[in-house]
Length: 139
Image (cartoon, rainbow, N blue to C red; front, side, top):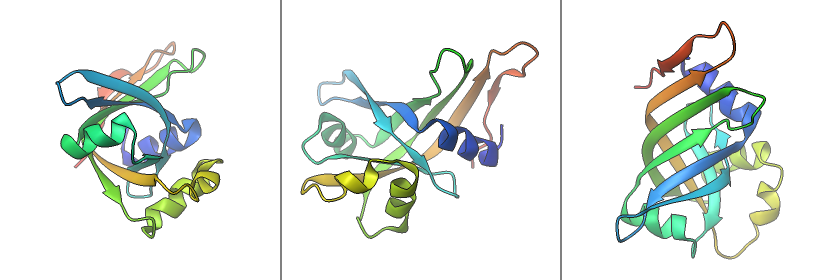
């Protein structure tokens, strides 16, 4: 799977499990709506008071899993660095275009947008005759 295939994979699914690390070092996970930019970054929103936002502000390394539908038999694991982006960042429009409820939440007073720049990935394809498990080429 190359970067373009990764982008299409994420755009076709739009949900991910995000894993962050709490202040005491414990893992915390949450399902999020996620969009893929043309550059291959991932964007999501959350609230400023959420555990995930507090966690990634303290420790920006995150992990995500995209693709967990039983009938799909494919999944992508990603790791990367997350950071807050301005509501005026063009990637926020990318997010709102791909996530149906994104524009509704944009008016929330405590909404915050986060971009993840993946630096490691793995595609697992368990369909008959598939390519199996392969690393994703990321710069």
